[in-house]
Image (cartoon, rainbow, N blue to C red; front, side):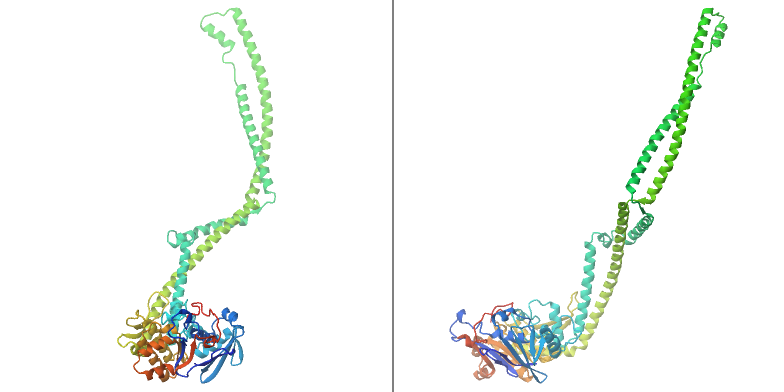
Length: 586
């Protein structure tokens, strides 16, 4: 895919026609080169905007700034793919659609069904993170983050996404990278589950081994069995509370009756004991005692004893009659109370039997809730047990598969040495042309670390922390990918002016010489935006003026100036925030 032309539906727009191969330069010039004020700089003339508009026509996400500040504008990009001329037009008003070769397509349909398959061979099912927009960014670097390293093309890219893109475009087996990501994602998921165990108040002790799950489940199963039996046998009594009250009243009456009966039985025993008591000494015994002592009782004394004895006998007879009467009354009352107790015992037993097999709704609910709590606890422990066993098994399997993938990748890289040597040699040849005294190369290694990265793709130029070397690595890496033509049909690389700011003018001139040479040899395009000051610095460091003319002047297709609006890319003055990482920063 090579760029042919960028146009717009507004007459003020400066049409950009790209050279078919070799260099294509867009230069920002100052009307007064001696003026160093920021008010008259080449920032804002449209050098970086050009890159954005090409990206816009190639499916960049909608931008409200364009709709607000360029209403009614339409941009058209003409390019060549597989020998055919294709044109896409996108309006600032309806950015969710494009017109591609006369067909109206949704933006996602355009990128996923047309550009992805045609430019990069993306077919369903596609690998995660491998999209047309992620891939095109390496050929069309837009914004400051894209110039921070050779692997990065966007602000919020993960190292995995960078590595996957690099592996795919260098022709490495991207499925190896995807498999390691898949295994690492599974590893992290298993670790996340185990971390949840650690946080769970119920499962924490079992996870750390302080309590045994099997023993706890055995205990819970026994409790559940008991509670289930009780729940099955439980009968709810609608008038349960009244029955409880009646049973309590019966118990109180029974207790009072029992107390009364016990008291009467004690009284009866006392009466019976009293009825059997006789006088200790009779009159006859007294007389015999005196006779034995040879003492004769006077007649008066004898009469007195007989009188006392008769009086005492009368008292005893009277008391006996009274106690006998009381005894009969108590016996009758005891008989009544005994019968009453029998009735109360029977009623009490009936209440207790009923209450033993029935209960209040609240009691049933409490029983059911207790059963449910035990079942939930048991279910959670069984789920924990299942997940823990699964985690342990999958962790062992994951570790084994990761080791197998490490071996498989090592074997693959050994078999792909021709490819990796070719990639390194191409990178090294360009880097050596710019930095002949530096050790250079692009090395692909197997990453066996505990991460998502399958390959370590290291572009190296000795002293790459120095000014300009990092940018040189970007150039060499992008051109290595372009010239390799693996998994893509791209025939251009487009770089912004910011790429050349830190490179020494001599190395920068050599960079452009190499870019022009290899682009012509391989029939592809190297497109760059430059400031005139960059050109002047390179001119002063080139010994052959004619070489400067043929390399830079003849390949400049558009000069953008700050002297008037007509000299700018849009032909008008407008402040566009077309890139979130910059604001008209050229």
